[in-house]
Length: 124
Image (cartoon, rainbow, N blue to C red; front, top):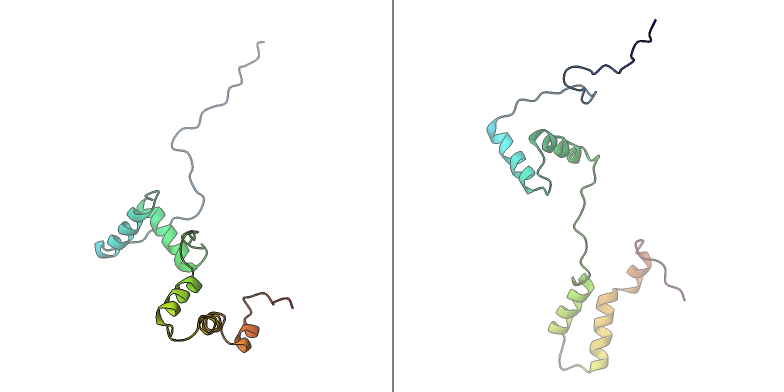
């Protein structure tokens, strides 16, 4: 007797998708408009279902929203404060006194500098 041909039988129908249970939600058009607007503002233009999933994840806090990258050429708060201090400084005072006042304003009082927990301790 001849051997029968073993061939993998193809499955019929649509392939199985996600195994998570389906949650259907009915939304009014007024509720859908901001979701569609948010989806259009995204780079990859997600579908309505994906947009709802992402917004729910953001709302629940499980996904960290990425911030814009800090540009290296953008001025820091210290630079902006220095410009304003120079603008408002007493022009009649000597240059050394102006520099001392500016340094004191930018660094802040000494007792506060020691209390900052977000800054490393200065080496003495």
